[in-house]
Structures are given as structure tokens and as C-alpha cells.
Length: 123
Image (cartoon, rainbow, N blue to C red; front, side, top):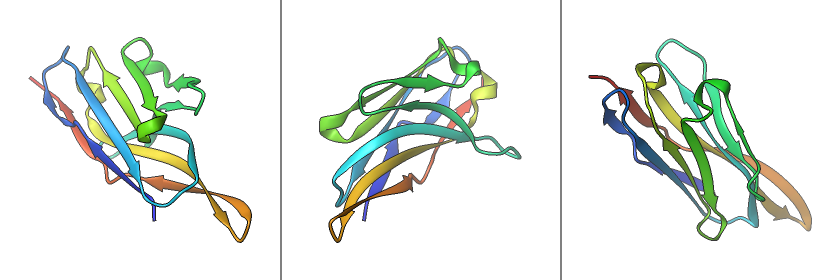
């Protein structure tokens, strides 16, 4: 069973920075795309950023130039560096990964979510 464990959330003042980490562990044959999503109170979960195995990235418009997603394939870990935070960034941030497993000789793909980490931007 594959698990994602997130860390790095907390309270930060507007204009501040935080770095989120998410480590994958468990039985798998590799990880494809990894990403970060967020859900603010009363709103739907939304994509923040994704990164492929080769390092191709994708961001939602509102975080471009402020957030940077990266990954360490050797450690099965994805990071989200968040700078110039504002109150609109307040949300629970979830890590997401698509991993590969071989079942009876056939490659299968499974999606897994982390438990979420709260980011609060407030003065």
C-alpha cells in the first residue's frame, strides 16, 4: 500500500514563505506525475501545480511566479516552495501521486492522496 506523508504547513504572515514536502512510501514500481492541490473552506479542491517524472511543470495562473514545484525521484518526494503568500492562498494543501504497480504481469496505475496540511496566511 502506497502512502503520501505531507509536512511543512503552518501559519505565515502575508508576503511570507513556506515549503511543503510530500514523501511517498510503500510497495510500487515507480511514480509518474506528482502534484499539489488545495481546498479552501467552502470551496472545491483545485489544482495548484503538477510535475512529471522528467520535470515538466504546470501551475494554476494565480500561483505562477510565486510557487515552485520540484521533486527528488530518488527519494520519491515532491516539494512546493511558496513565496509571496497572500490570504487567498489559505487552504488545506493535498499531495497527489500516480504510481505504477505490476499485477499478474500487467502494469497498473493507481492514484493516491495525502492527508492534507493546513496553510494559513494571516497577519
